[in-house]
Length: 210
Image: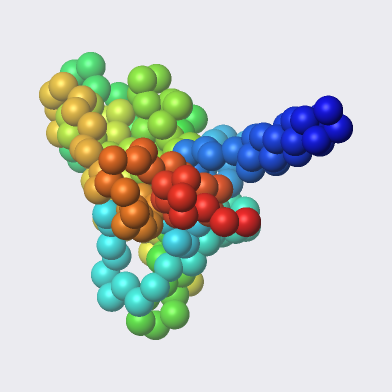
């Protein structure tokens, strides 16, 4: 009887240990920081976050700090009306971007050039359908006219340039390149279901050791 009780206790202990080491699908960490100023709101993306944007003579990336964002916004807002004087793609019902600057949620990405200068790329979006996406990844789209635009600010030379305003038409989000998933180890038995450990490495149950 004691052996049965002992065996049952041992079995329950092992089950509890296995439950404590839950197998979960690893969720990607969003490398962003929310920033808020007197007339701007947005998200700064980490220097390691993959983007499909480049700047002239690019040499690297950096993560903008609050002071960098504040300076970039001050320079951009000071010069935006002049740079946007032709109101490209802002006819009819499309908003004139410098007249509605508070309406846009920003995304900030930092670059460095061969001269060591810091450049902040600002991606501005005024689209309620994209609100939940803006903190998770860089949102690019075609169409939407003045509701989607971007600009570059060189923090060292204080040059503001590269204003791009979306063309008119229906908004269509540009798909991003899928980020790499966890490494997959070859299972010993192809018929057994693979599972994901907290490490992000996939194993089948026979390969798991702790």
